[in-house]
Length: 69
Ligand SMILES: [Zn+2]
Image 1 (cartoon, rainbow, N blue to C red):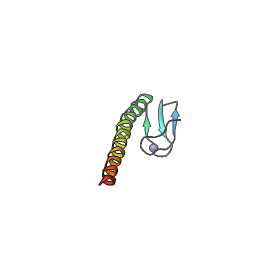
Image 2: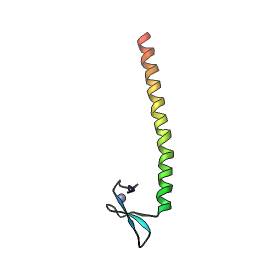
Image 3: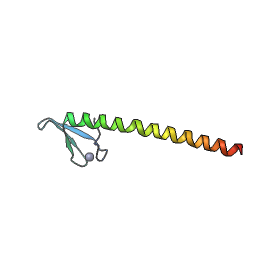
Image 4: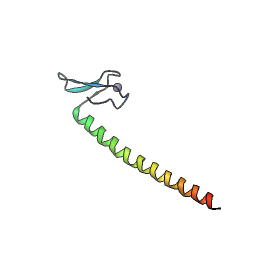
């Protein structure tokens, strides 16, 4: 079951309108739109993860340099 990109609620498939409809907020998305949103979310997740990794590395370097002095 897909998850609503707006509120995180469950989405159900509406066979008549051929849309996924959010049970919580009523957002309706076509299969194609849902796929596009999923791809967009993936694109955003990767740089964010990379940023966090970089930050951790910088902190570690800072911490090590503090220890040396
Ligand atoms: Zn929703």
